[in-house]
Image (cartoon, rainbow, N blue to C red; front, side, top):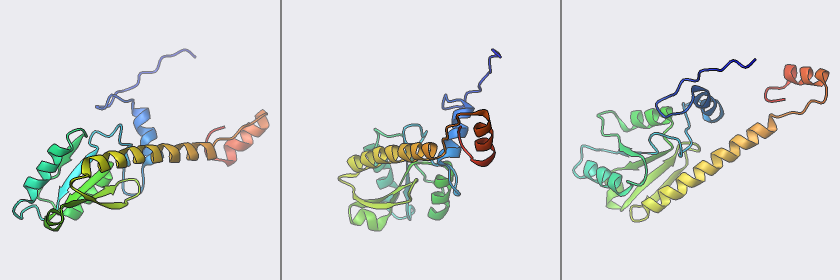
Length: 173
C-alpha cells in the first residue's frame, strides 16, 4: 500500500530505524559501538588520578589540542574503571587515558572501542594518530558490517526456495 510512515527523529537527526540498525550491527556485550563519523562524542579523555596536580589541566590542554574532533573530558568523581565502562556502554569510539606517569613520559594511551586495542602515543603526535585511528576504525567497522551483510544474504529463485531460506537462515533473501 501507499501509506506513508512517520519516522521519529533522534537528537542526532537520524531515524530510530537507523539507530536500531547501528546498535544491531555494531553493538556488543558491553553496549554500543558507534562509528566515529556519527558519534556525538568521538573522543573521551579520561584523566587518571585527576586529583594529582596538573593531571586535569593536561586533560583539558589535550581537549583543546584535539578541537578538530568532537571531544570531551570526563572529570566526574567516578573511578577510572567506572568511566571506562560507561564510555564503552555509550559507544564512544576513542578513549584517551592520561595520568601522572603518562604526562611524565609525554604520552597518552588511546583505546579503540571496537577492538579495545590500546595504543601508546606521544603527546606530540596525538592529533595525527587520533585522526588515523578514527579513519581506520570507520573503515574497519564498515568492512565488518559489509562482510556480515554479504555472508547473511541469500538468493531464492522460487517461492519454495524463498520460504525454505526464510525458515532456516537468519538474514536477507
